[in-house]
Image 1 (spheres, helix red, strand yellow):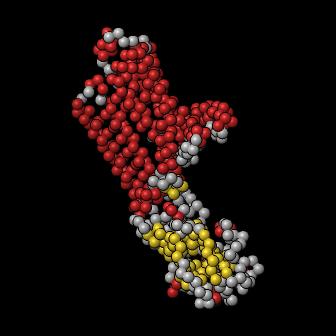
Image 2: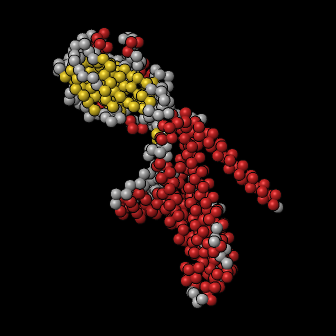
Image 3: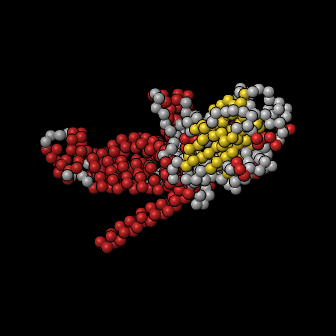
Length: 483
Protein backbone atom coordinates (compact mmCIF):
# COMPACT_ATOMS: atom_id res chain seq x y z
CA UNK A 1 0.00 0.00 0.00
CA UNK A 2 2.82 2.38 0.85
CA UNK A 3 4.44 1.72 -2.54
CA UNK A 4 1.12 2.44 -4.26
CA UNK A 5 0.84 5.77 -2.44
CA UNK A 6 4.37 6.76 -3.47
CA UNK A 7 3.67 5.66 -7.05
CA UNK A 8 0.49 7.74 -7.15
CA UNK A 9 2.35 10.75 -5.81
CA UNK A 10 5.05 10.26 -8.43
CA UNK A 11 2.46 10.13 -11.20
CA UNK A 12 0.91 13.39 -9.97
CA UNK A 13 4.29 15.14 -9.84
CA UNK A 14 5.28 13.89 -13.29
CA UNK A 15 1.91 14.99 -14.69
CA UNK A 16 2.28 18.47 -13.23
CA UNK A 17 5.81 18.81 -14.62
CA UNK A 18 4.66 17.54 -18.02
CA UNK A 19 1.80 20.05 -18.15
CA UNK A 20 4.11 22.92 -17.14
CA UNK A 21 6.65 21.88 -19.76
CA UNK A 22 4.05 21.61 -22.52
CA UNK A 23 2.43 24.95 -21.70
CA UNK A 24 5.84 26.63 -21.48
CA UNK A 25 6.98 25.07 -24.75
CA UNK A 26 3.91 26.24 -26.65
CA UNK A 27 4.08 29.68 -25.05
CA UNK A 28 7.33 30.35 -26.87
CA UNK A 29 5.40 31.26 -30.01
CA UNK A 30 4.15 34.38 -28.23
CA UNK A 31 7.77 35.56 -28.17
CA UNK A 32 8.02 35.28 -31.95
CA UNK A 33 5.72 38.25 -32.24
CA UNK A 34 6.41 40.98 -34.77
CA UNK A 35 5.14 44.44 -34.00
CA UNK A 36 3.03 46.79 -36.05
CA UNK A 37 2.38 50.49 -36.30
CA UNK A 38 0.77 52.84 -38.79
CA UNK A 39 0.35 56.55 -39.50
CA UNK A 40 -1.49 58.67 -42.01
CA UNK A 41 0.34 61.69 -43.45
CA UNK A 42 -1.18 64.34 -45.70
CA UNK A 43 -0.63 67.86 -47.00
CA UNK A 44 -3.66 70.09 -46.54
CA UNK A 45 -4.68 73.74 -46.57
CA UNK A 46 -3.92 75.58 -43.35
CA UNK A 47 -7.59 75.08 -42.48
CA UNK A 48 -9.81 72.64 -44.33
CA UNK A 49 -12.48 69.97 -44.19
CA UNK A 50 -10.20 67.08 -43.14
CA UNK A 51 -8.13 68.80 -40.46
CA UNK A 52 -10.11 67.18 -37.58
CA UNK A 53 -10.22 63.67 -39.02
CA UNK A 54 -7.35 62.71 -41.26
CA UNK A 55 -8.81 59.25 -41.91
CA UNK A 56 -11.46 60.88 -44.10
CA UNK A 57 -8.90 62.48 -46.41
CA UNK A 58 -8.90 60.29 -49.55
CA UNK A 59 -5.48 61.59 -50.59
CA UNK A 60 -3.68 60.93 -47.28
CA UNK A 61 -0.82 58.44 -47.39
CA UNK A 62 -0.85 55.48 -45.00
CA UNK A 63 2.55 54.10 -44.00
CA UNK A 64 2.28 50.99 -41.87
CA UNK A 65 3.99 47.83 -40.70
CA UNK A 66 0.93 45.62 -40.63
CA UNK A 67 -0.03 41.95 -40.73
CA UNK A 68 -1.71 42.55 -44.11
CA UNK A 69 1.55 43.73 -45.65
CA UNK A 70 3.27 40.36 -45.38
CA UNK A 71 5.07 40.49 -48.70
CA UNK A 72 6.17 44.12 -48.42
CA UNK A 73 4.25 45.06 -51.56
CA UNK A 74 0.57 44.35 -51.08
CA UNK A 75 -2.19 44.68 -53.66
CA UNK A 76 -3.38 47.76 -51.79
CA UNK A 77 -0.30 49.68 -52.93
CA UNK A 78 0.00 48.23 -56.42
CA UNK A 79 -3.54 49.23 -57.35
CA UNK A 80 -3.40 52.77 -55.91
CA UNK A 81 -0.54 54.76 -57.47
CA UNK A 82 0.48 58.21 -56.32
CA UNK A 83 -2.02 60.61 -57.93
CA UNK A 84 -0.98 62.63 -60.97
CA UNK A 85 -1.72 66.31 -61.40
CA UNK A 86 -4.41 65.45 -63.90
CA UNK A 87 -6.11 63.08 -61.45
CA UNK A 88 -6.02 65.75 -58.75
CA UNK A 89 -7.30 68.50 -61.01
CA UNK A 90 -10.69 69.77 -59.90
CA UNK A 91 -10.83 67.42 -56.93
CA UNK A 92 -7.88 68.12 -54.66
CA UNK A 93 -5.07 70.60 -54.40
CA UNK A 94 -2.54 68.36 -52.65
CA UNK A 95 -1.03 64.97 -53.19
CA UNK A 96 1.23 62.61 -51.23
CA UNK A 97 2.82 59.30 -52.08
CA UNK A 98 5.56 56.85 -51.19
CA UNK A 99 8.26 54.99 -53.13
CA UNK A 100 7.89 51.84 -50.96
CA UNK A 101 11.49 52.36 -49.88
CA UNK A 102 13.29 54.10 -47.08
CA UNK A 103 16.34 55.05 -49.14
CA UNK A 104 15.91 58.34 -50.99
CA UNK A 105 18.85 57.57 -53.28
CA UNK A 106 17.09 54.47 -54.64
CA UNK A 107 13.76 56.07 -55.43
CA UNK A 108 12.31 55.24 -58.86
CA UNK A 109 10.03 58.15 -59.86
CA UNK A 110 8.01 55.81 -62.10
CA UNK A 111 7.06 53.58 -59.17
CA UNK A 112 5.30 55.72 -56.64
CA UNK A 113 2.23 54.66 -54.69
CA UNK A 114 -0.22 56.27 -52.37
CA UNK A 115 0.36 53.90 -49.43
CA UNK A 116 3.18 51.72 -48.12
CA UNK A 117 2.16 48.49 -46.33
CA UNK A 118 5.16 46.53 -45.08
CA UNK A 119 5.68 43.37 -43.14
CA UNK A 120 5.82 43.56 -39.36
CA UNK A 121 9.24 43.41 -37.74
CA UNK A 122 10.60 42.16 -34.41
CA UNK A 123 10.99 44.78 -31.72
CA UNK A 124 14.74 45.01 -32.32
CA UNK A 125 14.41 45.86 -36.03
CA UNK A 126 13.59 49.38 -37.15
CA UNK A 127 12.13 50.66 -40.43
CA UNK A 128 12.00 53.88 -42.41
CA UNK A 129 9.21 55.11 -44.67
CA UNK A 130 9.42 58.02 -47.13
CA UNK A 131 6.49 60.27 -48.02
CA UNK A 132 6.57 62.80 -50.89
CA UNK A 133 4.27 65.80 -50.76
CA UNK A 134 3.30 68.61 -53.14
CA UNK A 135 0.55 71.08 -54.03
CA UNK A 136 -1.07 71.38 -57.45
CA UNK A 137 -1.04 74.53 -59.58
CA UNK A 138 -4.63 75.17 -58.46
CA UNK A 139 -3.43 75.95 -54.94
CA UNK A 140 -2.78 79.70 -54.61
CA UNK A 141 -1.90 80.23 -50.95
CA UNK A 142 1.70 80.65 -49.82
CA UNK A 143 1.11 78.47 -46.75
CA UNK A 144 0.04 74.86 -46.40
CA UNK A 145 0.11 72.31 -43.56
CA UNK A 146 1.42 68.84 -43.01
CA UNK A 147 -0.99 66.75 -40.94
CA UNK A 148 -0.36 63.40 -39.31
CA UNK A 149 -2.44 61.00 -37.20
CA UNK A 150 -2.22 57.35 -36.12
CA UNK A 151 -4.11 54.80 -38.16
CA UNK A 152 -7.42 53.67 -36.71
CA UNK A 153 -6.99 51.50 -33.56
CA UNK A 154 -3.22 52.06 -33.42
CA UNK A 155 -1.92 53.36 -30.10
CA UNK A 156 1.62 54.67 -30.34
CA UNK A 157 2.18 54.09 -26.61
CA UNK A 158 1.99 50.33 -27.19
CA UNK A 159 4.68 50.21 -29.86
CA UNK A 160 8.19 49.14 -28.72
CA UNK A 161 9.74 51.78 -30.97
CA UNK A 162 10.62 55.44 -30.93
CA UNK A 163 8.45 56.86 -33.70
CA UNK A 164 9.50 60.11 -35.34
CA UNK A 165 8.29 62.10 -38.33
CA UNK A 166 11.20 64.02 -39.83
CA UNK A 167 11.71 66.36 -42.75
CA UNK A 168 14.32 64.70 -44.95
CA UNK A 169 14.37 67.20 -47.79
CA UNK A 170 12.70 70.53 -48.47
CA UNK A 171 12.07 71.99 -51.92
CA UNK A 172 14.90 74.16 -53.18
CA UNK A 173 12.49 77.06 -53.64
CA UNK A 174 11.57 77.38 -49.94
CA UNK A 175 13.31 77.91 -46.63
CA UNK A 176 12.02 75.86 -43.69
CA UNK A 177 13.31 74.99 -40.24
CA UNK A 178 14.23 71.33 -39.48
CA UNK A 179 11.25 69.21 -38.46
CA UNK A 180 11.52 66.31 -36.02
CA UNK A 181 8.24 65.28 -34.38
CA UNK A 182 8.12 62.68 -31.60
CA UNK A 183 4.98 60.74 -32.50
CA UNK A 184 4.65 59.23 -29.04
CA UNK A 185 4.51 62.62 -27.38
CA UNK A 186 2.50 64.18 -30.18
CA UNK A 187 0.68 61.31 -31.91
CA UNK A 188 -1.37 63.64 -34.10
CA UNK A 189 -1.18 67.24 -35.17
CA UNK A 190 -0.53 69.80 -37.90
CA UNK A 191 2.33 72.10 -38.81
CA UNK A 192 2.44 75.00 -41.25
CA UNK A 193 4.92 74.95 -44.14
CA UNK A 194 5.75 77.24 -47.05
CA UNK A 195 3.85 76.03 -50.09
CA UNK A 196 5.48 73.97 -52.81
CA UNK A 197 3.62 73.68 -56.12
CA UNK A 198 4.47 70.90 -58.55
CA UNK A 199 4.10 72.18 -62.11
CA UNK A 200 4.50 68.75 -63.72
CA UNK A 201 4.25 65.09 -62.76
CA UNK A 202 8.05 64.85 -62.74
CA UNK A 203 8.17 67.69 -60.21
CA UNK A 204 6.03 65.74 -57.70
CA UNK A 205 9.17 64.13 -56.26
CA UNK A 206 11.07 67.43 -56.07
CA UNK A 207 8.94 68.83 -53.26
CA UNK A 208 8.82 67.91 -49.61
CA UNK A 209 10.14 64.52 -48.48
CA UNK A 210 9.25 63.29 -45.00
CA UNK A 211 10.44 60.16 -43.25
CA UNK A 212 8.58 58.15 -40.65
CA UNK A 213 11.24 56.31 -38.68
CA UNK A 214 10.72 53.48 -36.18
CA UNK A 215 13.75 53.01 -33.92
CA UNK A 216 13.87 49.97 -31.57
CA UNK A 217 13.76 50.66 -27.83
CA UNK A 218 13.67 47.12 -26.39
CA UNK A 219 14.12 43.46 -27.21
CA UNK A 220 11.25 41.37 -28.54
CA UNK A 221 11.12 39.32 -25.32
CA UNK A 222 10.85 42.46 -23.18
CA UNK A 223 8.21 43.96 -25.48
CA UNK A 224 6.08 40.81 -25.40
CA UNK A 225 6.40 40.47 -21.62
CA UNK A 226 5.49 44.11 -21.14
CA UNK A 227 2.55 43.78 -23.51
CA UNK A 228 0.78 41.14 -21.42
CA UNK A 229 0.47 43.66 -18.57
CA UNK A 230 -1.53 46.02 -20.77
CA UNK A 231 -5.25 46.61 -20.33
CA UNK A 232 -6.42 45.73 -23.85
CA UNK A 233 -7.10 42.29 -25.34
CA UNK A 234 -7.78 42.48 -29.09
CA UNK A 235 -5.74 39.73 -30.80
CA UNK A 236 -7.58 39.88 -34.14
CA UNK A 237 -7.57 43.63 -34.75
CA UNK A 238 -5.56 45.47 -37.37
CA UNK A 239 -3.03 46.22 -34.62
CA UNK A 240 -3.31 43.23 -32.24
CA UNK A 241 -3.18 43.76 -28.50
CA UNK A 242 -2.45 40.95 -26.04
CA UNK A 243 -2.98 42.51 -22.62
CA UNK A 244 -3.91 39.93 -19.99
CA UNK A 245 -5.16 42.48 -17.45
CA UNK A 246 -8.89 42.54 -18.45
CA UNK A 247 -9.00 38.73 -18.68
CA UNK A 248 -7.35 38.21 -15.30
CA UNK A 249 -9.45 41.02 -13.83
CA UNK A 250 -12.60 39.27 -15.07
CA UNK A 251 -11.39 36.01 -13.54
CA UNK A 252 -10.64 37.76 -10.24
CA UNK A 253 -13.99 39.56 -10.05
CA UNK A 254 -16.03 36.44 -10.84
CA UNK A 255 -14.06 34.43 -8.30
CA UNK A 256 -14.27 37.08 -5.59
CA UNK A 257 -18.01 37.60 -5.97
CA UNK A 258 -18.70 33.87 -6.17
CA UNK A 259 -16.73 33.31 -2.96
CA UNK A 260 -18.61 36.15 -1.24
CA UNK A 261 -21.94 34.65 -2.30
CA UNK A 262 -21.06 31.01 -1.59
CA UNK A 263 -18.93 31.10 1.57
CA UNK A 264 -21.52 32.26 4.14
CA UNK A 265 -24.07 29.68 3.01
CA UNK A 266 -21.52 26.90 2.61
CA UNK A 267 -19.83 27.44 5.99
CA UNK A 268 -23.19 27.80 7.76
CA UNK A 269 -24.26 24.49 6.22
CA UNK A 270 -20.99 22.90 7.29
CA UNK A 271 -21.45 24.16 10.87
CA UNK A 272 -24.98 22.77 10.96
CA UNK A 273 -23.91 19.37 9.67
CA UNK A 274 -20.96 19.20 12.02
CA UNK A 275 -22.41 20.63 15.21
CA UNK A 276 -26.21 20.50 15.18
CA UNK A 277 -27.63 18.08 12.63
CA UNK A 278 -28.85 14.67 13.82
CA UNK A 279 -26.69 11.81 12.54
CA UNK A 280 -29.43 10.58 10.19
CA UNK A 281 -29.78 14.04 8.61
CA UNK A 282 -25.99 14.28 8.24
CA UNK A 283 -25.83 10.85 6.58
CA UNK A 284 -28.33 11.96 3.95
CA UNK A 285 -27.52 15.62 3.45
CA UNK A 286 -23.74 15.44 3.08
CA UNK A 287 -23.75 12.85 0.24
CA UNK A 288 -26.40 14.93 -1.54
CA UNK A 289 -24.23 18.06 -1.25
CA UNK A 290 -21.20 16.17 -2.52
CA UNK A 291 -23.24 14.83 -5.43
CA UNK A 292 -24.09 18.40 -6.41
CA UNK A 293 -20.38 18.88 -7.14
CA UNK A 294 -20.70 16.33 -9.94
CA UNK A 295 -23.35 18.30 -11.85
CA UNK A 296 -21.84 19.20 -15.26
CA UNK A 297 -20.99 22.88 -15.37
CA UNK A 298 -22.60 23.20 -18.79
CA UNK A 299 -25.89 22.23 -17.14
CA UNK A 300 -25.42 24.95 -14.53
CA UNK A 301 -24.54 27.37 -17.30
CA UNK A 302 -27.72 26.73 -19.26
CA UNK A 303 -29.75 26.77 -16.05
CA UNK A 304 -28.42 30.26 -15.45
CA UNK A 305 -28.98 31.30 -19.06
CA UNK A 306 -32.58 30.10 -19.28
CA UNK A 307 -33.82 30.95 -15.78
CA UNK A 308 -31.55 33.19 -13.73
CA UNK A 309 -30.47 35.59 -16.51
CA UNK A 310 -34.01 36.42 -17.72
CA UNK A 311 -35.17 36.85 -14.11
CA UNK A 312 -32.36 39.28 -13.29
CA UNK A 313 -32.86 41.18 -16.50
CA UNK A 314 -36.59 41.55 -15.92
CA UNK A 315 -36.16 42.67 -12.31
CA UNK A 316 -33.02 44.81 -12.54
CA UNK A 317 -33.15 46.25 -16.05
CA UNK A 318 -35.08 49.38 -15.12
CA UNK A 319 -33.59 49.81 -11.66
CA UNK A 320 -29.89 49.63 -12.52
CA UNK A 321 -29.78 49.49 -16.30
CA UNK A 322 -29.01 45.82 -16.87
CA UNK A 323 -29.06 45.52 -20.65
CA UNK A 324 -28.53 41.77 -20.77
CA UNK A 325 -28.83 38.87 -18.34
CA UNK A 326 -25.38 37.72 -19.45
CA UNK A 327 -23.35 39.76 -17.01
CA UNK A 328 -20.90 39.63 -14.13
CA UNK A 329 -23.67 39.26 -11.53
CA UNK A 330 -25.31 36.30 -13.26
CA UNK A 331 -22.00 34.57 -13.81
CA UNK A 332 -20.97 35.02 -10.18
CA UNK A 333 -24.26 33.71 -8.82
CA UNK A 334 -24.11 30.51 -10.84
CA UNK A 335 -20.43 30.15 -10.02
CA UNK A 336 -21.38 30.38 -6.35
CA UNK A 337 -23.79 27.46 -6.83
CA UNK A 338 -20.89 25.48 -8.27
CA UNK A 339 -18.64 26.31 -5.29
CA UNK A 340 -21.07 25.59 -2.46
CA UNK A 341 -20.60 21.78 -2.47
CA UNK A 342 -16.80 22.05 -2.52
CA UNK A 343 -16.57 24.60 0.26
CA UNK A 344 -19.23 22.86 2.37
CA UNK A 345 -17.58 19.45 2.15
CA UNK A 346 -14.06 20.64 2.98
CA UNK A 347 -15.29 22.98 5.74
CA UNK A 348 -17.37 20.24 7.34
CA UNK A 349 -14.37 17.90 7.38
CA UNK A 350 -12.28 20.64 9.01
CA UNK A 351 -14.90 21.22 11.72
CA UNK A 352 -15.27 17.52 12.49
CA UNK A 353 -11.47 17.26 12.79
CA UNK A 354 -11.64 19.45 15.92
CA UNK A 355 -11.38 17.02 18.89
CA UNK A 356 -14.60 16.33 20.74
CA UNK A 357 -12.71 16.90 24.00
CA UNK A 358 -12.46 20.60 23.18
CA UNK A 359 -16.22 20.82 22.76
CA UNK A 360 -16.76 18.88 25.99
CA UNK A 361 -14.40 21.20 27.84
CA UNK A 362 -16.34 24.22 26.65
CA UNK A 363 -19.62 22.64 27.67
CA UNK A 364 -18.17 21.82 31.11
CA UNK A 365 -17.34 25.50 31.50
CA UNK A 366 -20.97 26.35 30.91
CA UNK A 367 -20.61 27.72 27.35
CA UNK A 368 -23.66 27.60 25.12
CA UNK A 369 -23.52 26.03 21.67
CA UNK A 370 -23.19 29.47 20.10
CA UNK A 371 -20.36 30.38 22.46
CA UNK A 372 -18.58 27.07 21.87
CA UNK A 373 -18.74 27.67 18.15
CA UNK A 374 -17.52 31.25 18.38
CA UNK A 375 -14.78 30.74 20.97
CA UNK A 376 -13.57 27.18 20.43
CA UNK A 377 -14.64 25.30 17.31
CA UNK A 378 -14.38 27.99 14.62
CA UNK A 379 -11.01 29.35 15.84
CA UNK A 380 -9.66 25.80 16.09
CA UNK A 381 -10.80 25.00 12.54
CA UNK A 382 -9.84 28.31 10.93
CA UNK A 383 -7.01 26.72 8.94
CA UNK A 384 -9.36 24.16 7.42
CA UNK A 385 -12.06 26.77 6.76
CA UNK A 386 -9.53 28.99 5.02
CA UNK A 387 -8.39 25.98 2.98
CA UNK A 388 -12.01 25.32 1.97
CA UNK A 389 -12.37 28.88 0.67
CA UNK A 390 -9.03 28.73 -1.16
CA UNK A 391 -9.94 25.43 -2.82
CA UNK A 392 -13.22 27.03 -3.88
CA UNK A 393 -11.24 29.92 -5.35
CA UNK A 394 -9.03 27.51 -7.30
CA UNK A 395 -12.16 25.80 -8.61
CA UNK A 396 -13.67 29.10 -9.73
CA UNK A 397 -10.49 30.40 -11.36
CA UNK A 398 -10.32 27.45 -13.72
CA UNK A 399 -14.02 27.24 -14.57
CA UNK A 400 -14.77 27.70 -18.27
CA UNK A 401 -18.30 26.75 -19.32
CA UNK A 402 -20.23 28.91 -16.88
CA UNK A 403 -18.27 32.02 -17.85
CA UNK A 404 -18.46 31.12 -21.54
CA UNK A 405 -22.25 30.76 -21.45
CA UNK A 406 -23.16 33.56 -19.04
CA UNK A 407 -20.33 36.12 -19.16
CA UNK A 408 -21.17 37.85 -22.42
CA UNK A 409 -17.63 37.63 -23.81
CA UNK A 410 -16.59 41.27 -23.25
CA UNK A 411 -13.34 42.14 -21.43
CA UNK A 412 -14.23 44.18 -18.34
CA UNK A 413 -12.13 46.79 -16.60
CA UNK A 414 -14.27 47.94 -13.66
CA UNK A 415 -14.61 51.58 -12.69
CA UNK A 416 -15.33 52.90 -9.21
CA UNK A 417 -16.37 56.54 -9.57
CA UNK A 418 -19.25 56.24 -7.13
CA UNK A 419 -21.79 53.81 -5.71
CA UNK A 420 -23.85 53.75 -8.89
CA UNK A 421 -20.81 53.20 -11.05
CA UNK A 422 -19.49 50.45 -8.77
CA UNK A 423 -22.83 48.60 -8.75
CA UNK A 424 -23.05 49.10 -12.50
CA UNK A 425 -20.00 46.88 -12.95
CA UNK A 426 -22.13 43.93 -11.87
CA UNK A 427 -24.48 44.52 -14.78
CA UNK A 428 -21.79 44.59 -17.47
CA UNK A 429 -20.71 41.65 -19.66
CA UNK A 430 -17.48 40.02 -18.62
CA UNK A 431 -14.97 37.51 -19.90
CA UNK A 432 -12.26 35.61 -18.07
CA UNK A 433 -9.03 33.84 -18.92
CA UNK A 434 -10.35 30.22 -19.14
CA UNK A 435 -13.27 30.92 -21.48
CA UNK A 436 -11.06 33.15 -23.64
CA UNK A 437 -8.65 30.27 -24.18
CA UNK A 438 -11.51 27.87 -24.95
CA UNK A 439 -13.33 30.27 -27.27
CA UNK A 440 -10.34 31.45 -29.29
CA UNK A 441 -8.09 28.40 -29.48
CA UNK A 442 -10.09 26.85 -32.31
CA UNK A 443 -9.70 29.93 -34.51
CA UNK A 444 -6.00 30.71 -34.32
CA UNK A 445 -3.09 29.97 -36.61
CA UNK A 446 -1.29 26.89 -35.32
CA UNK A 447 1.92 27.93 -33.58
CA UNK A 448 1.21 31.56 -34.35
CA UNK A 449 1.54 34.56 -32.04
CA UNK A 450 -2.10 34.47 -30.91
CA UNK A 451 -1.74 30.73 -30.30
CA UNK A 452 1.35 31.34 -28.16
CA UNK A 453 -0.37 34.01 -26.08
CA UNK A 454 -3.28 31.68 -25.33
CA UNK A 455 -0.85 29.05 -24.07
CA UNK A 456 0.94 31.72 -22.04
CA UNK A 457 -2.41 32.67 -20.55
CA UNK A 458 -3.11 29.01 -19.81
CA UNK A 459 0.27 28.68 -18.12
CA UNK A 460 -0.51 31.71 -15.96
CA UNK A 461 -3.82 30.14 -14.89
CA UNK A 462 -2.23 26.76 -14.21
CA UNK A 463 0.48 28.22 -11.99
CA UNK A 464 -2.06 30.39 -10.17
CA UNK A 465 -4.43 27.51 -9.42
CA UNK A 466 -1.53 25.22 -8.49
CA UNK A 467 -0.22 27.72 -5.94
CA UNK A 468 -3.69 28.25 -4.45
CA UNK A 469 -4.26 24.50 -4.19
CA UNK A 470 -0.90 23.94 -2.49
CA UNK A 471 -1.56 26.73 0.00
CA UNK A 472 -5.06 25.40 0.66
CA UNK A 473 -3.76 21.87 1.15
CA UNK A 474 -1.13 23.00 3.63
CA UNK A 475 -3.63 25.10 5.56
CA UNK A 476 -6.04 22.18 5.61
CA UNK A 477 -3.41 20.02 7.31
CA UNK A 478 -2.50 22.71 9.80
CA UNK A 479 -5.02 22.83 12.64
CA UNK A 480 -4.93 25.73 15.06
CA UNK A 481 -5.65 23.46 18.03
CA UNK A 482 -2.47 21.48 17.27
CA UNK A 483 -0.15 24.48 16.97
